Image 1: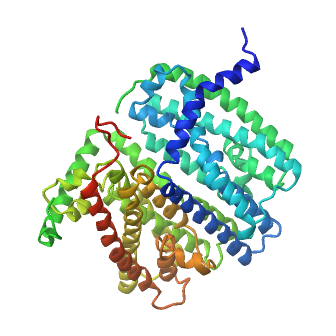
Image 2: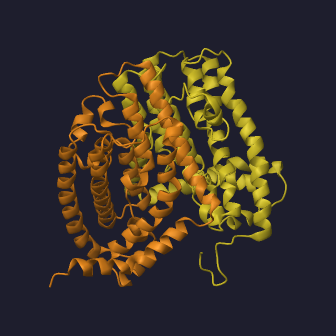
Image 3: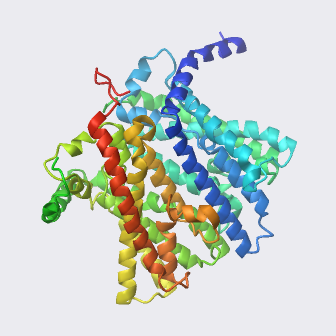
Length: 270
Length: 285
């Protein structure tokens, strides 16, 4: 029998305490937690300044406008955690915590997502919101290109998160299949995220036509697509459609592969 | 732990490093396939952090006053700095806030040798951690050829001193920020990682044109500019200042002078309070 929407919503209550615990843990030690966000803020300011230098020294009229690129960079920084959605699943496999997750009365990946979302709460309050609010003071227009762009950004971000979670499942499956370390998986993801998703440098600035190729990949659907929608660069509906395709493909593939790999999982470490 | 500086132990450094080399070799020989995999991952992924800068420079034939070859040298230099850290200060020696935050600093304090000797030698893993170093040197050599830089004794000396100074700056910054973990072990446990990531990602950008408080901050409080930008400016001729190659070594000395007593202050607190991460039942909070 299929569950009704009300039952599905009710079932989410099971994760409420997990979200709360993860949230309070991530905000632990109060002021000192803010230091992490301060470092991210400095990084964002530097990236914004680098674009000023780039535009001051090169004629980029045919590529992009400085204001658009700075908005792109600011939103990429503010929503960086969400554009690179990742859970603790790999770490839990590596250090053995996964064994306790399997005996919990909730689905394993659901638990991992609940922890991730709990950690997002302090990050959103202490970094995302302040950065967006402070944008006028640092000389960047943080507003979306249009009302439609702003509204489409929300489902686009949701697609981005879903693809990120699919990548998470695929990397966890790879760990189970190969025994590779969680640190390498994290670094692989960070390197790809930094380099090829368009989260740091818009794909239009890539050489050798690389950006045009990457735009068709799930990597671009993770960061470039929602940021382009927000800044009004390209056809928003086409970008969204591409993301939806990747949500279906990556989501389906990752669930199918993980379903097989979880049966081969061996808890070790501790 | 032996108290005081214990500089008489300086002669033990080579033996400690040799021991680290033998242990690392044993690790490699135990599982050569796994080691090759680790080395390949390091060789590819560590320079990838600065790949975005290189792609941008390649697309625009440079960034600001930097040519694409100069940016490539910058990337190689930053990778080499990272490679030295990875080869000589691994096992969470550079990420010292993890050991502090987890209450593992005791493992260093109980050893029958000065703390500095342990910190200077314990993380030496030149084979398993050396891939990034090789990649960094290869990138620099490629860029050096493209730039046609002179291989004189003066330039080589300036290069070596600046490279070591950059490593010192990164280490001193990570230790300085890690002091937070003495007071806030949970929040501070990963702060050295955050600092390291931020220095690594910002260290590969040419920071010319960033003035004001932020420009000063990037070579002092949060010295991402000293990781590669400032020394490479002098080495590849972006800076016209004939004494520019002295700035990073001077900053390294200053950072060292600040970091040592600050860390010692945190260590005094650790000696008095220990780690608060574990409950009476032995569980980590």
